Amino acid sequence: MSGKLSRRDFIKRSAVGVIAGGAMLTTTNLEAFTKAAAAKKAVFRRSGDDIVVKLSENTALSKTGGSVKINDELMLIRNSETTFLAVKTICTHKGCDVELEGDKFVCPCHGSEYTMDGKVTQGPAKDNLKTFETIFDSDKGTVTIKTESKSN
Image (cartoon, rainbow, N blue to C red; front, top):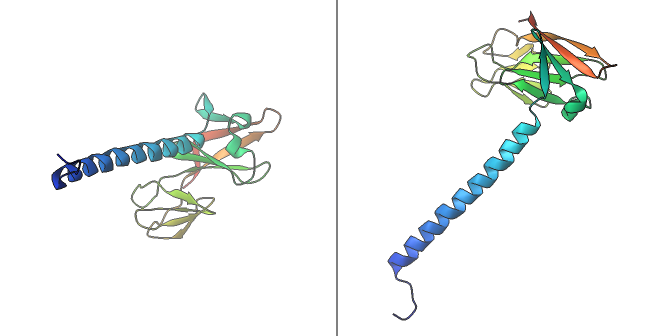
């Protein structure tokens, strides 16, 4: 043969290249996404029914506006030097996971919006997100989340 590829061979090789390249790109993006998600997961311990978050182990909370996910349903946000907010990130409309977007929570399923402290600003949700009492201990550098809901 003269070294030229037949159309059939060209298509086969191109398909293999596209599949291999796509698989590599997907793996790279998933790794980056996984690392980013892991960076926002909180390190914490339980003390009875409470959750204790050590600030030195959660650098995202080192400045005002920082946040970490405690688990799939709970987020801790630093509001100021001494105040924190723990909020359940499950939409009260149909139970979708809300996302923190700037200074509000937004439900990607049906468009409900909530303030940073969980109050409904746009429906269809009618009830506020659940929030939990937090206790900041500046001497220990910890935030304790009381797992009993303080409001709906």
